[in-house]
Image (tube, rainbow, N blue to C red):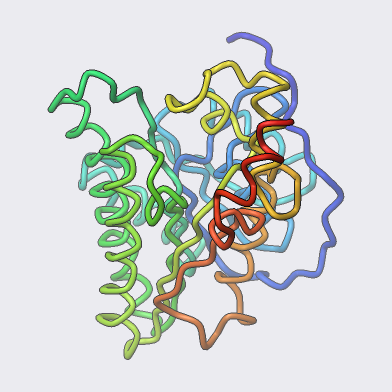
Length: 283
């Protein structure tokens, strides 16, 4: 097993707001100092007291995130599973409930954003299988445990590509469908005590975002400056910004919020692109 730099973890206030709750975070693996949004979400929820199931298709990446949770004295277990397999999703949810007594929070973060330049049907199918159907299968697996206890929170990680042009066609379609699915789930399961919401990240500095097909793929300093200047804040977001939005939606502070989408984008989607053009060009 190769040696990887430890995941960078900022100072986190330990207020115990999620103590006694169990959260499953998909796509929560990591490699190196910069975590993806899933890894940052898993670490933050653990720091806030949750029992976290770090679910990833890659065991080495899952263990890298687990090491970060253990460094902050959080409580977590691994689930190595392919979310395109409904049986694997049900097994992971059952394992989480068996380990910790239930499932209170599900964060559907796992996703891919491959190059779509060739417009291959196989690429479309792969994107939909992971980004959309995987989230549906994990929801179906976690819901029986939430229904049994009469409460739960599901948070889907979408993207601003779900409601603005500029992403790959399949990726955008999957992320837009995720927002629509969340609304339908919120309507279906709200009377049973289950809330379903979505977080839509914008230009956040995570490994997948920095290598997205629509940019130069290098994560270069110039490209990152341009990404930052595309926001009203003039800064680039991080996976931790996404994680704190998830924390809010997962917890009691959001008890009367369901069916909504929170953009975490520095205001990018709330400003006319033309007024930002000069700023971006000069970055």
